[in-house]
Length: 329
Image (tube, rainbow, N blue to C red; front, top):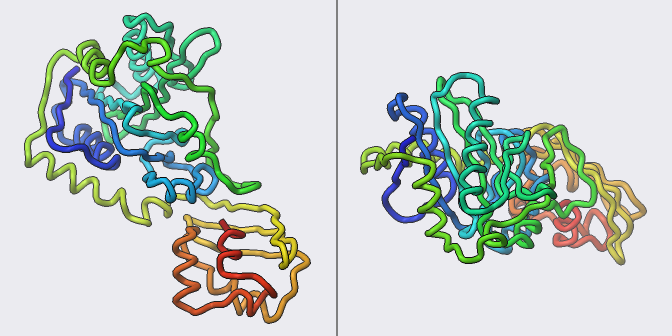
């Protein structure tokens, strides 16, 4: 297996997802490839997940945490500068179960060389100790004749920040998407506090690979071309499955609200508001119809309210624009 060296400055997370695709599409198929990367705080949702059911979007925006979507399935994960991401690209057959069982076992075996009691789990996770605390979670997908696996290695991650970022703030959520498995986690430094991040990565590279292949400038440009679509709203929100949210909330001075929001491909299909609030005008034509078709995203709804100069208090007595946004998100 060759270590894939990517020269240049640290990039945002989609660049490394694109580098995996480039390796699978363009590099010689007579070898496997492995590389590691760290990024600024980022939440990564799986291909089939709904962002609203997996991510505390407001928390992420307030704390400068990126949100992106990958092409593999599985659950939502959090990455930061103390959480190493592993990428593995192979042409080893179509039996993905066997292929990635062998890969996660190799990751576990590496940790055991460091004196950490690690083992590969049944869902392509790597756990530590009898309690089975997760130290590495992996997802995978096929791309032509190649397979890509990628996952976390929790070196010394901020667990509290991770939990806040990937825990939705909505009271009750309804979706046909895939919910993440909330597993107890642990970190490498709890077992080997003497290790530095760079030292750990050097040892992982030495154990996992037997040579190096460096990308040149032309290849980096190809990776950047693959990277660009990852930032589009169509990819980030358009992959959301049909689903929605339902919850109740009381706004003092306005009333009790029962809210049901239906979304399709990440856009608002319908909003239903019920409760004991006082209506001053038609709710649908005056307010809710203006939101249909918008991305289910606080900033998008706020921009539409401003553009159309919509005043919610003219429709529902006492309801400010901020109240409405807090209610829907």
